[in-house]
Image (cartoon, rainbow, N blue to C red):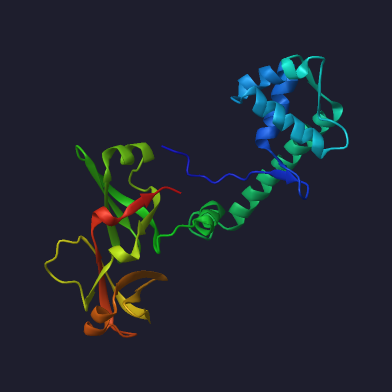
Length: 266
C-alpha cells in the first residue's frame, strides 16, 4: 500500500539563482563516493551532461567551488568534492534533520485535527479544477472482474460510491479505512427539489439546503449545505433552477452517478 504520509523537503536558493535541494546533495555525495561525475551520474540515474550542468550550477552559487574536476574532467576524468562541498552536505543534513523534527512536532501539536498535521497540510495543498472535492474514508471495497465499487463515508449522515477500474483500485492499494479524496465535477451533479426521489438510478444522493445560488444568462450555480461544514455545488440551466424553485433555504438533493466520482489518494 502506498505511503500516504507527507514529507518535508528542504530547498536552498539565492535570489535569482538555481535551487539546491536533496537531489543536488545526493549528487555531491555520489561524486564524493565515486570520485567522478560520470560515476555519480550513473549511480543516481542522471545523464552525464545533466550531472555536469548541475555541478556547474552549484559551483556558481558559492564563492568557492563545491566540486573540482581533475584534468579531463568533462571528458570523463576524476572529480572531488571540496571542503566547501563537504560543509554544504553537512549543513544541509543538519537543516533537513531539524526540519523533520519541527514537522514532527507540528504534527504532534495538531493531533486534535483529524489525521494530524500531515493530513491537514495535504488538504490545504490539494488544488484541482473540480469544484466538489471531499475528503472521505473508504468503508468498503467490492472488487469485480473489470470494475471495483468503492464505498466512502463523507460525514456521519452522507455516503458516496465510486466505480473505478479494478487495476486502479489495486495500484492505489484501496482498502477499508483508506483516506481518499472524492472529486465530482459540478456539471455532473443533477439537482432534485426536496428529498431524494424514491426511484432513480443515480446511487449517490446527498440531501441538503440551498445556501447559495448565482445566476448567469444561461446557467445557474447552486450550492447545497450538507451539514458538518460540507457543501456540494451543481451547475444547471437557469430555467431549471427557476422552475424547481431553488431559493436560499429550500431543500434539494444532489444526484450523480458512481462512474462520475474520481477517487484520489492523499
